Every structure is written in structure tokens, then in C-alpha cells.
Image (cartoon, rainbow, N blue to C red; front, top):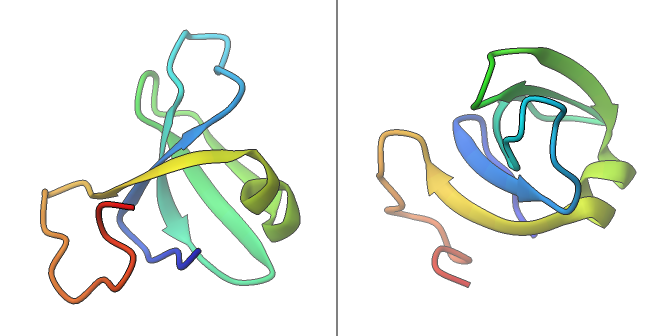
Length: 72
């Protein structure tokens, strides 16, 4: 899967606030994710994100243009 800054990812486990959705703020060996429910930010290893991702919902602003994996 390809991750880009601004994508909303749905993870397998929910955050204590109840949200499954996270916004990608930084991509690299580590990811910075922001909870869409409460705004809490975390740094997490790429391998963990790739393992726990259920779905990539596209960009927060709704634009999915230019994404080869959009809608998968």
C-alpha cells in the first residue's frame, strides 16, 4: 500500500476515544498519525502501521486523484 501525507487510514484497533480513523501527518520509516476523534498524535513504526491498516480512505479533503490504489 502507498501512504501519503493527508491520507485517512482505518486501523484494526480503536483508540481509547472510540475512533478507528487516523490522519497521516508524516511518512517515512516512522509515521506520525493524528487521531480523527480526539486529535491525539503518535509516532509509530511503518511496519506496525502496514500490519494494522484495514483501509485507506483517501485524503482528508476528499481528493483521491493521482492515487493508483484509491478505492481499493
